[in-house]
Amino acid sequence: MRIDFQALGLESVEGGAARARLQELACSNAVQVREQLLILLNRGARDVIVDLTDCAVVCECCGVPALIRANRRARALGARLGIAVPEESPTRQALERASRSEPFPLTIVPVAPVGPPPVKAPLAAA
Ligand SMILES: [Zn+2]
Image (cartoon, protein in one colour):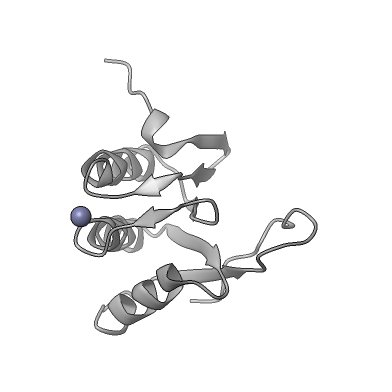
């Protein structure tokens, strides 16, 4: 079966690194996004960035839990999942709130809102 990673807006998969750029993470696609992230990780992706900088909607009821689920799997596999979000955004606040009660806190990669295209943002040290 061919797996379509379209829901992830997958930009690249090189070596073990993948970057997914989401337009939204809402009730309509959160399950699909979660499953595709899990498949990526299960297939050996070891450094995954979920880029939410263009993401208009991140649903707290299902979008945030989807990321937490993927993050737990990543940690269990010895991989890293980083979430790129605008520095000042409700999304970042929601993720940080959720992260506080997690045994494996989300790795949040703040991105400046405007300016030159982001250089390959290193994941924050765990
Ligand atoms: Zn929802």
